[in-house]
Image 1 (tube, helix red, strand yellow):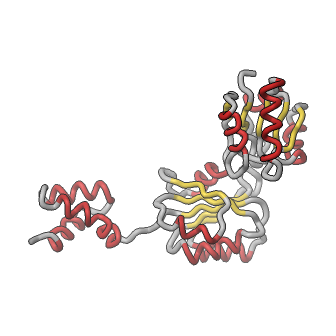
Image 2 (cartoon, helix red, strand yellow):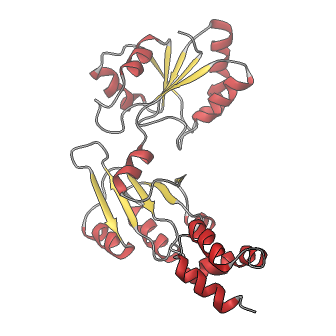
Image 3 (cartoon, one colour):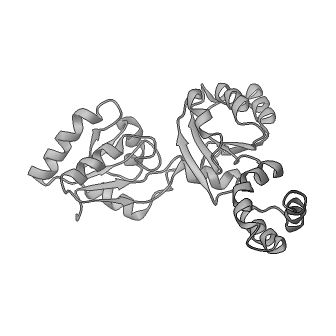
Length: 270
């Protein structure tokens, strides 16, 4: 093995979604760090992985990281880090171990694979050119995200999904929402639409499994866009023709050239 730590992605539902390289690493490291040995045991049993498991999670990370680093430094032990499902370090404490490796000049790498956030983004049908992963976020943090011009991705548990959607509806106005559940499993489902429709679905259907909530970016009105462009317009309107400025601003904002030209003629025609 060439690294002290391998950060290994594991399946998020369907156990066949694991790479050959990931299996090779899990079978050949000295110790595999996992969140819950009972959950990891299912994967290990299916692929006949007999490597020793050690629990590493939110509850013991601070205490156990020094012990892991000591084993790496003084006994040349090689570790793999996995989560219950998906890619470690995404909403889990794996970053603490990676940072400890950096501080101690210990080599590490990632064995890429499935991520629930990215899989849900693909399934949602929402724009994927710009997105932000927010993870598990409480209501008091929603207002900080309102103006972010990107698809927002959240994780949520089944016992909170309906309450969270109700809270989101009050803050994230006029958004398209998609809720994805049971990704890669038999009952994989994407519920997509306005908040009212998605909320009604969860009122009528008991929530089971883990959920990813995705929200479209803010729908800014043309008037709001033009107001945001005013400082730029004021700086350029005397330097280039209104027709050329309309063309430039159209490419920048997505507003039609004619609408921009008419706006310039009405407001900057002194």
